[in-house]
Every structure is written in C-alpha cells, then in structure tokens.
Length: 206
Image 1 (cartoon, rainbow, N blue to C red):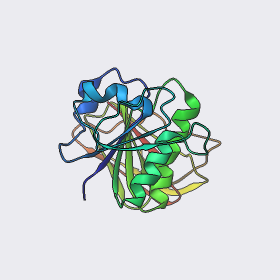
Image 2 (cartoon, rainbow, N blue to C red):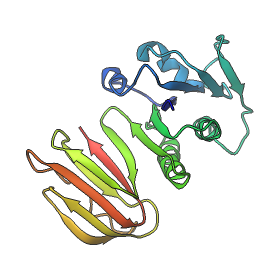
Image 3 (cartoon, helix red, strand yellow):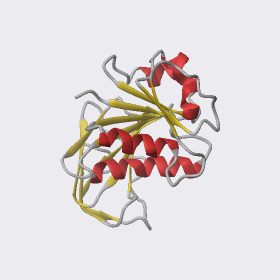
C-alpha cells in the first residue's frame, strides 16, 4: 500500500531537504494551514482536512473533510486517525514541528499512537528525522551528525546501542533522566538500536 504523508501548518524552511523524503506514489493529506506548503512541495493533495481557521479552503477538486473549530482532535491528529481508518501502514508527517510547543508535542506523540496501532510513522523537519523504536532494530548511518534516544513513554529497559561513540548494553532510561542525548555513530559504521521493553523516540540530526 502507498505511504501516507500528512502535511501540517508548521514552518518549513528547507523545502529541498523535506522534498527529498517524498515519493511520487505517496498519498498526500494536507491539514488546513499545511496547504501553504503545497506549491513549494510540488505535491498535489489526495485529501484535505481542516477547520480552515488558519488557511482558506481552496475548494480544489479533491476530497475535502471540513471540521468544526471546536473539537477534541487537532487537524493533524484527525488526519492521522482518518488515514488509519483507510488502512495505511506507513506514515510521514511534515510541517508538524515548529513554534507552537503544544502542537509539536502533540504531533510527536502521534508517533506513539501509530506505534500502538501497529503502524510505522516518522516526522521530518528542517534538521532531523524522528521515529519510535519499540520492536525490531533501528539503524543510524554515519552520515547522521548526532542521534538521541528520548524516553517519552514510561520506563524503557534492555536498551542496546552498538557501533556508537556512547554504547549502551541492557540500559534503562526513564522520562525523569534523559541521558541518551547527542550520541554519534562511529565512522564507517552503522549504529544499531534495540529496546527490549518500552518505547523510545529516536531523533536523527543531519
């Protein structure tokens, strides 16, 4: 199945970097203010959702879901839920990290929601790529400047980090003490990260 790309209204400055992650086959959902990025991204919408409080409804000839302004979900979270209903397994969120810390955190936690539902999601911004590490192994190549492991959900145990400047073996990280920040992949190597119990947010900075 196609990957679902959800575009939010946060600022994007390096369009070239963000566009490099897009594929012609992506199913594009633009959320309200995310429509301001449509021309620069050169990707037409397959679905538009929003309450249109920050961007006027362009009335394009594509499927559009108009939402009320007063609701439990942000436009971005609604889009994530709608895409899950439609059966997408892979997600890329762009334009969702910015000046509004409340929206930024809510969107980062959407990665946990996707992981809890057996879906894989990633967030790309001007500087980094973020994803959840739970089951399986995550890899970080040496083109990455830094990578960090942040605990955003309970206690994580059995954390292993190999081929990195600061390796970990059977480590435990709690939300209260974040010591997995600013690690580096060894030159010529690919770092390997596994978590036996819990979930970690992996942030790769390029």
